[in-house]
Image (tube, rainbow, N blue to C red; front, side, top):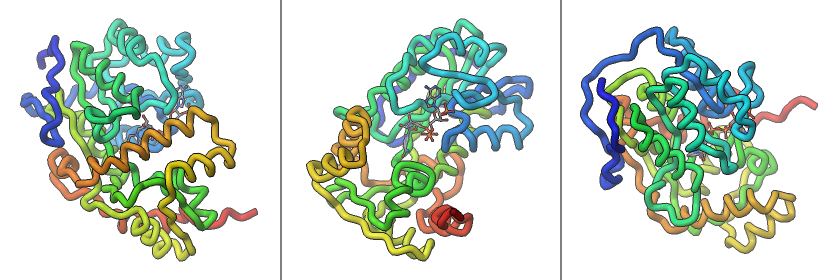
Length: 304
Ligand SMILES: NC(=O)c1ccc[n+]([C@@H]2O[C@H](COP(=O)([O-])OP(=O)(O)OC[C@H]3O[C@@H](n4cnc5c(N)ncnc54)[C@H](OP(=O)(O)O)[C@@H]3O)[C@@H](O)[C@H]2O)c1
């Protein structure tokens, strides 16, 4: 496989930008570094690769191999002997270009980066993901980018769970719908990019199979979990007041506001075929996510 000197991205007119490469799977002695290995995508990427017998190294601040974006002294041990890196970022700004440079010096020859859907048209949101995309495209080695819409698992593993459990989720979505993507699909796509050559130089936008109104997504969770949950479409001002009352740091409140401003622009509501194109099957439906998560006890009360 050649290692392109120039970024191959040609824009995102279609949801999938793909450069034709010879088919093939990677050598079995490759060592893949999985960053954010305790997170929603990283821990699943790790499980899939381990189950496939691939050599992997899990890294994050709380992994056995410690990696901290804000402590460069931790980077070299994580990168030692690694050929490929899965990169998912925290929500705070990190020195991603310096990391890519150090990874290249350590011998890394492929990056698979997790980004967000619409990263090429965002106006004021997700600068860290835009920087990550630019850094891997300009790296001169193999890269692939998976851009995901809002994760279904935000409702049970992340930011919306507490509100779901409290029975009321209030977000400033301006009546827009969202093609929530199941993290399992995001991870299947990322693992394909990590282990096969055909998606090198590709930016793939992945979503669920349908666009759902937020209140319908919440109603689906209510149905699956047997809980009473209300969704309220609040104004941005009301949302800011609520976040302040919850004691959310200003930087996090700003990041959320920027994300929902982007959602209210309504440019990212249509589903894409990204999952189908990479995996050759339909994306998982939100109702299936909700049923599976509920059956696994995602919204059950914890015993006190
Ligand atoms: N949620 C969505 O709907 C969505 C959609 C599209 C794209 N994304 C993007 O996905 C990325 C997050 O991926 P994710 O959801 O898989 O992760 P996640 O569940 O948000 O978990 C964050 C991960 O980052 C690690 N981390 C946090 N601070 C760190 C630091 N200073 N140094 C090293 N590691 C650190 C955490 O591990 P430790 O605490 O152990 O360090 C954890 O593994 C973000 O860039 C987000 O914008 C999210």
